[in-house]
Image 1 (cartoon, one colour):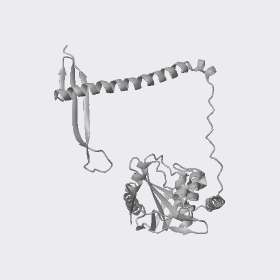
Image 2 (cartoon, rainbow, N blue to C red):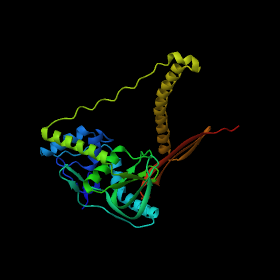
Image 3 (cartoon, rainbow, N blue to C red):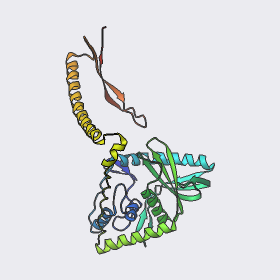
Image 4 (cartoon, rainbow, N blue to C red):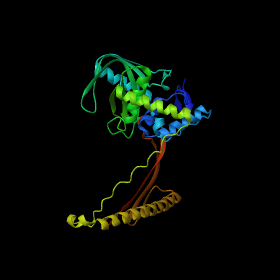
Length: 318
């Protein structure tokens, strides 16, 4: 059954905070921090849960969460179709409605999809080598609108965590990028990585039970700025002057933008008062219109929104 959380439709939470580390938390615990959380925050959340305090997760990127929630099923279906084309065989897929658990490790996973390939799938890894998958494995579905052509480290940790929970030994990350392109990234079970993860999980639970703490996250070191003053004569460029001019131009740009917006507002108010959309003066032609247009989205929805058009053309009668 789907639940609505903060306006979003999602599967009910299947893992138990305070007693089980979920797949989305594995990267933060092992790598110390990921894009949206760090291990100190995860530890605090689990301690509070054990004390009977339920803390709502802070949503740091609402757009990303909404996008992933609404597009996951479509991307999974698209991936299934593509994989059948690539293998020439049947790709069975289902969405588990239960969590896979390893109680001795204190881990549990809500897997996006379990897939079963009837024929071999060959995928290229980042190092150029080719891996072959067949049979049953994991599919993790991602929509990443800041994608750079490779999987994030926390994604690999997430799939490795899922493999530990399910005893499956391969997975695929199916990612739709900002251009609407679908990528497949293979993940193989890595025993050395698995051992490191199990040790990190054991340390985590020891801190939960003993009310211990991780060391504070070290601030990123300030980069070393190299003094290039003595090198400037060789470049035939007055860098200091250019830097000053750039900052001055940026400040003037912001000032003139505000001035321009104020002037436009004055012209539009005058046009509205006169009830005209196209006006002429001895030296100018002015257009100020408002119309309803369909919102530009990845999928046509028929939703309309107001759109304005404003222009001033200088004319000459020479």
